Length: 167
Image 1: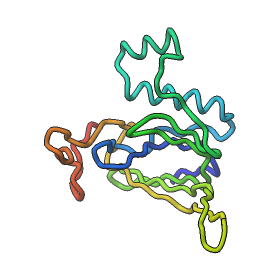
Image 2: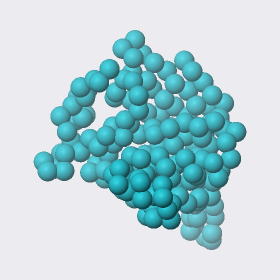
Image 3: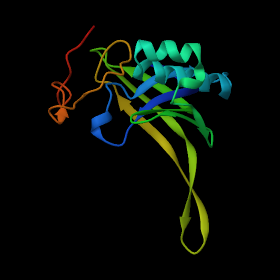
């Protein structure tokens, strides 16, 4: 088991299976990094995983050409479209590896507040423990797992199936 008391966790998010990627986790950065540094890394991480080489060269020459600018929303850093990246400081980050080399990652999300209308405007906290088990061994992957032409998950990504291993 590997544990960190707190770190910047970067994860992929999407609203429908059509944008699902192989690993929900995209990166982990040191807690000591400032928000501006994390924003810069997240913006480039998104570009690297979603752009062509020609687009990356254009962004390198003129960063203002990058259409997916990072934005900060109440302590969360967000970048991209569908899927998009979210970075935030999490606590109690734990990685357990099973005997076959698969990792289960869990962490405590920061509280997020939303307005609830019940007799007035009340802020309600959402947070708590999140857990994900990687279905791949080895390095992280941002490979899409949805077959757009067939309108279903690619072979090996259907629930209860394991994808072919690269390592």
